[in-house]
Length: 130
Image (cartoon, rainbow, N blue to C red; front, side):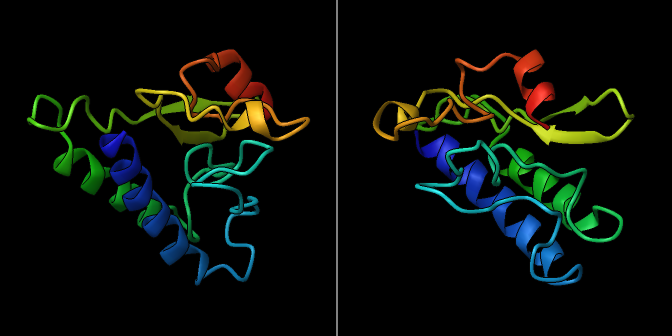
């Protein structure tokens, strides 16, 4: 869980640094919720974004920093940041990752779906929700 939270925090920071350059809504995503994702799955862990800021540089830099910090196999932290990009049918690319564990937020919030980075969510579902 520490690996997931640290990767999410670095990713979130990069997105928010980019959001300051693009207005109050930043990338157009809903960055609210319990932990780092909202009930709709948006936020740093399911970022509805093709990169924060005008060219995505801040989010790209944050992803690179998280991957450098958490390359995998670094005890006592299990797993890696493990970011990848998914391409929507309209050609936009979105950073995403699959967490090591499920936070079960969807189980306590009526009507909530699993987060976009939940291990229970498929890439097809992630693309549909972007």
